[in-house]
Image (cartoon, rainbow, N blue to C red):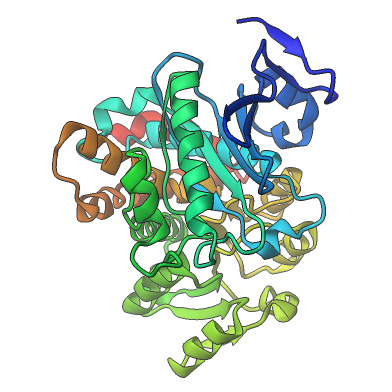
Amino acid sequence: MSFTQDGNAANVYSFEGEQGMPIEDHVERVIHAPDAIHRQYPDLFQRFVVPITVFEYRNVERNWTLSVATVAEKGKEQFSLGGFRIVPQERAELPGFSPIAESIGLALGMEQKVRWSRMVRVAGPNSRKHLSRVVGGKCVLLPTPGSRVGEKEDTALLSFAVSCLHDMNRTHGVLINTGQDLGHGRMSDGRLSSLEFLHSRFEGSIVADTSLPTAVGNFHVLEGALAAYGKEIGASTIGVIGCGNIGTHILERLRERGAEVWILEASPARRAELEREGLSTFAPSQKREFLRLPLDALVINASGGTLDTESIKAVSENSSIEIVCGCENLIMPNPQDEEVLKRSQKIFCPTEYCGMMGYLTAFEEYVSSLERTPFSISAMVEASADLTKSAKMAAEFVRESGFSISFRDAVGKCAESFQT
């Protein structure tokens, strides 16, 4: 099909004849082509440029929007991997928030995770043979008040999303594989979780709790990077930012190894729980003080944007901090700030690298379902141990270069060695 410019929206292109096309009552679909996406959102492609297509679905009656971004090419039957985000209200209220921009940024991050996993040869036992067909993607659903998970209209909201996912699979010739992300929980009827609801109506939506293998993968990256400095986790002081599902799993392993841990957590209730366990916590208002602590490493798993320019400056000025890692999506609002960390001789392990086990777990579950083979979370946790070796080798390479190369580039330089 040829591309035609949409006269109603500057710099947006669509497949001919499909702009604003109704797919069912009150639902319209707009397909934003890669060339237009690059022109309209240039800031999102500062570090990493790949063709992204966005399917934007609108329920015009209820004002719901589902934005699905993918690197998949039309008709290639590729697996488009990326979580299903139901945008929390506090994120939706951020100045300039756009579900399309959110889905693009997250899909770019997913594509980087896919490429990292190929470099370091990490995958589940059932899905390894299909890695060449995997690309990055993301689903971002923007509800209205009263329709978020646990509220009265949640069934209608997710039913809208399911119909859109089926439509995109048919229209684009893709296999969407999605799952856990922000905004999920128990449905208002009390019977199913939102992930179970989606899975029962769309096979590509998986139900596995990917937070455990994601966290364990991050833990092994930290372990390997510390080893490059001759340090063990049990003899280190670690700052943890964000103690939700992933952060809690990491915290448990840090404590098992005997690390000294300091925590910055946004939720007052969660801080109170951690303090009852004898842990020292900081509120977001104390972030500057937290980043001045004598930490060996930072592990960041909050909801996004933690490493803003001011925080980058604080980390770069802390002579104790040697490693910055974590699985937080969209962690650095200004990607060029990564260079500040390199100049101050901090090893920054990209969050797409640290968090790749989450996507690999979702893919393993989906492939296992399609092939009717057993799926095991424990197998994915076991596979994540391979990240210790790759992180150690890459961090050693950075140090030996005198920090003339970034960790992300060092992983590529060391890729051939990861086989042995």
